[in-house]
Length: 276
Image (cartoon, rainbow, N blue to C red; front, side):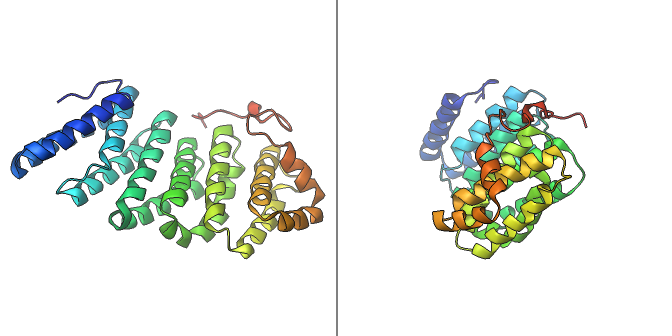
């Protein structure tokens, strides 16, 4: 059995077909040995210092999530641990982006089997967000929180107040890619709380902290797109009512463009990974 170094989706799909075939053809004991060998290979590639090997292992995990085997609970637990380790030990943004998508897939498919792990993942992501400013940690945290909001909303919903308090750290981060992913995480959260108007209004009030006369430019850049997301997620009448009370919000949010060409040109911000 071999996982190619620069494994693409096609190679991962071939691996999935192989596992499904072996599950049909091998005895229970022989298939267990086969899977143990496969887990060892995935671990080796995830532990590698080669990004291409890390990505190949993540693609393999993504394909194998929906393969039902007799030891499915054990498989889900192993995959969850692999992904947690990737976020803990890796630094490359490409790994974080793919690992977060695989994590979302695993939590969506795992259901009750992953509920406890989702709880832990959300808590860790919030801790990273609130902790010392380490760019790769902040980047990973907003990716994780977005996927949890989209794919494990029941568990995530319990942590919405903490999320709403903490997301401002990333929304006002001077690194553009962190800001962009923070906005995506906020958008996902707003879908979870769409029927909780009081939380919307609290978020609007919180934007004032970042739009004051003496607020730093990165704080303004983070607050304006947050306002835009809030206005877009509300029914038109409510959005107009709130925006009419703060005309500058409507103008500023409309001017914001995530391609980095708006306002005071956020492209001048540092790009992840940061040396700070």
